Image 1 (cartoon, rainbow, N blue to C red):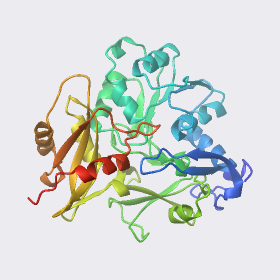
Image 2: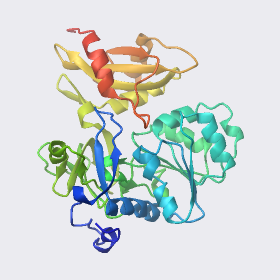
Image 3: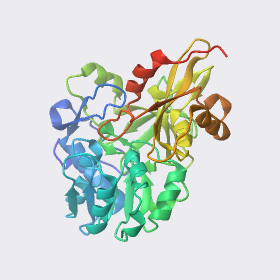
Image 4: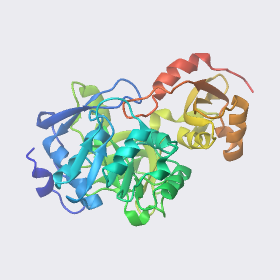
Length: 380
């Protein structure tokens, strides 16, 4: 695919008609591995170009803009979100040296270099908000903070706004297979829809489908399907998984969500992460949000573990912060105050650190392997 094909063959509301082919590949990007072994995702030349131009259009980027790639470049977010797009328009991209993520150092760099656009994934944001002297730094140049990979709670969004009142905080939805971000959030809608991942980006179409692939009405939760010029041509050396994931021109994302009346996307969680307990469908993200509101909790990941009566029960795996402590009973009581009874955890397991991908997302499949056989199975 020539780089211009993605632009010349696109209509106002339609994506590029020809599905990318594996032989068109430009690069292979490895998935983060949240659900199992990482896979090689093939990107075409046209998809690579289109993803950059998408963000230029969505966020009105220009040569005066800058970003700081604080995420490793082998991860889709560090490599493409606000990186290639700002390069495209002649802006400046700063790249962090290799090594771990140090929240205080990142904040000092963004302040000193007068960065205008920044990508911070949720795991980073939780650390950044704990930097004690952050209010002493100057972030007046920062126009926009983008986050993706997982939902950021409304409470955390409000805290970010108080801290960075001049910067628009936007949540986007994207995945390695879709070409980075596939939604955008207009600045004027941020306060109106703080928990939305935005609307489809230019030339992107999103539909919500049931297990048979039938489109669901607005407001109904189902699997998120994406069609975009930047979507993958498939998985490297894995035709079977490619066939499972691609349905013609559509990409089955494996994520669950719904669209509101205005076409804005709300992501509920991963299809494979949904817990089925006593006939009820439980999405971990809502429970994790409540757990993170407890001051002693640094982060939490919720999984389903086997139960002889209910099929599965809710297990919260919690990483405590540096200050304060909390017991299993106190966390369950905390959840009971904010959630329906069937959603609260039946058990809490504490860990020194959650297993994470290179992008900072907890690896739930590792937690399931670790805790499923150690679950406290009851018949109550």
